[in-house]
Image (tube, rainbow, N blue to C red; front, side, top):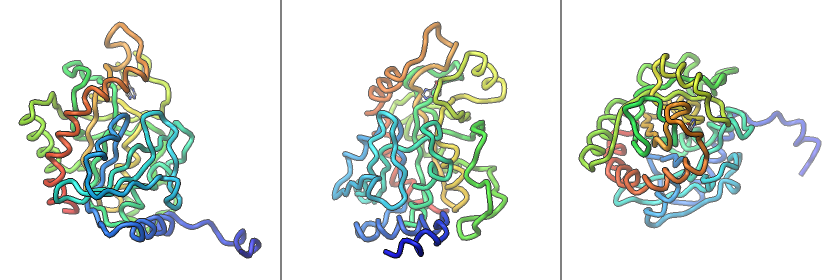
Length: 289
Ligand code: HPA
């Protein structure tokens, strides 16, 4: 390699980097999933349900960031669930790990170049709405971005999407209806709510939770919104589902710990997986519409 020439070359833009990752994925599998799932804390085992699956460590995919949070394996699993091809991200990276927001959304952009049109994002969240209980699932109907950053800051690349992005239906209404219908049919404790995203990594103070409730948030977490913005930017349709792993700070007279968050995720996993299995074919039907 000519090192002088290499160092003189400007760093590749996000579109080109995403295309490089996508072309690597195309070289690894014949499957061309139209739907992708981001599996949050403790949900990675959903990918075990896939048949004919290929598991690729993020470290092998060009430009993919590597997660450090516990419960986030760091593999992209591409396989079939019944007749539906799906790409599952076992874990994501977060801003609080020190990753840039561009890195946080890189996998979404890469999956977009790979041909994914419908994106299901899952996460663990604290319950602010007092009608929720630990273990409930919340279908996101909207979000409030309090992370102080977003992935569209800087020059806009029109190959990705528009400069000024409409966010009036960030979470696709037909997907939300499908998720609620199937959740109720399966006897799952399921709600619709607004997700507030904070930077983290500390959990919130009780005063912050009172503030979040006042401004209309039902759940709080440290992920998802940057990915939703990047997904909408490239024209994907999005479904978001939170698992209420704990009631938010100050609601119960007890501290919050990560172990409890992981344990609730583990307890609810079966129901969550049943729900994802039920809705995937319907999401695929509508993906990209
Ligand atoms: N706050 C923020 N993020 C979270 C929480 C919480 O209470 N629980 C799980 N993720």
